[in-house]
Image (tube, rainbow, N blue to C red; front, side):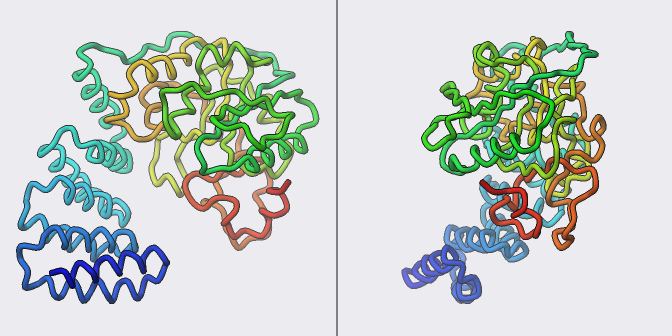
Length: 381
């Protein structure tokens, strides 16, 4: 058995070094030797995990299913099968394994996270939202879901704007902030702007960017909720706000986008976004709002107050927005063709869509590893 473990460990090392074919050969050897070791479900599970990392989805699912034959209530096996089935589009099967995982352990975070995704991809977003509220409010013991009553109506075209981005951790360096700032500067003629970056590390950020410290208490992309925090809003010069993800590439003049006045939260819809693979959802790569909309403050206040419980059931900030904002201003409808998703474009085409001003990059790839020839013309210092 020690020899089999060594084979699996060596395969893991090969996988980390992107020597996938060699890794697969070692896994196939270990798997064949395991056929006579019926008690080695733990090792079989590790082999399945490596297959999953190598994107050998069918092999991973097959081995996880073998683990379930011996351990029918293995929460991890159910969760991992669901994740693999979602990747290859077996959504009904993924849903079944999510439900079985939660039946065995209702506190399983990954089970809830996967359930949220698969229900949305099956077109059952409202069911996902309602279930999350029930779980959260049952644990809290009281109701917290908001009622948004006030919409800020405006017929005036904004002449100034607060442009915001958020940088946390080490995923994006200061060069991403600086490139975005310079791209905005090159791409607006009419709208006066102040550029802000909410960050836990301002080192290397252009001095013309106003760096604001992130409030403690949230992690990862949840930090986006702080954009709506009242103490932050009080520091902004303009109440008209536009948020851009750091990996946004500006490809034309953006005055039309910056001057769009929203009566609710302006946000992207997931329809026709290839990386989202779902209809009717929200994507927060670009957001527009007015700080006078007091309702939006609840996006941060409720989350900050109950983050530990909310984050047990919800993994994505965009899912939180879907739970909280019922009548958004859909930016693709308000600004047709102005904002496009990179993954939905033809990478081989040397030209961008005629009306495009912003290209967003949710998930993968990111601008630095995307193949389209036009990126170098717009994404630079």
